[in-house]
Length: 213
Ligand code: IMP
Image 1 (tube, rainbow, N blue to C red):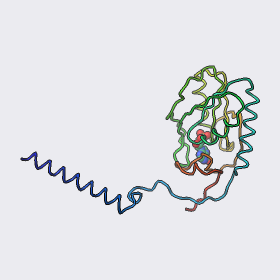
Image 2: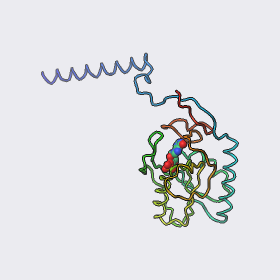
Image 3: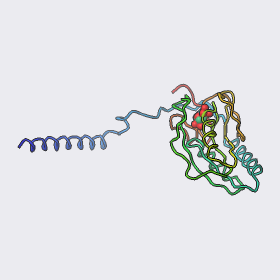
Image 4: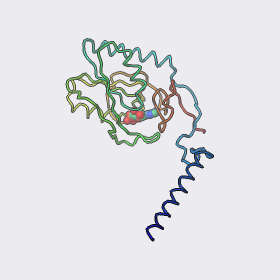
């Protein structure tokens, strides 16, 4: 008898939860019940337009194709910021190449934590291969410094770094970047793969966001 009462209570609870969920789904836009992760910010100005991006991608691809002539390349896209740059770059490369993806994290919002965590490692061995690490932006250099040291232990034939953007003024470690698309001033940029808390990656150009919301 007692067990039966418990079962009835559980059943009632389930019905109430289900009803609440249906009401929410039908009458109330669900987003209002959740913390909003996206705070829209206005674009202050465009820092790098499409033409400039296309031009430096072409130039970098030509330099790399010339420097590694007769060799095979292993491109490593550092996720997520480099996905657009990597896609544009490899399309212009005139050599046999493989692509792989690695995910490392060193930023929370606009601040570097100084700690680099590997979320996704490479799928294949890089031993004996000519590796090109493709970055979206080099800022303090901490991420790349750590990544290059780690990948060097896997015995590649060579490791080079190619980045779309470089903020040399912000450097905290001495790291050599072999191929730089463009140097930029000390500003936080988004677009062309670069994000602020996960958003704005889809913008085709590189912009600086306004402080005002
Ligand atoms: P670093 O370790 O300080 O060189 O930072 C490299 C990583 O920080 C990049 O791969 C980006 O993901 C992120 N980052 C640095 N500066 C910016 C920026 O201006 N906009 C967006 N992401 C940035």
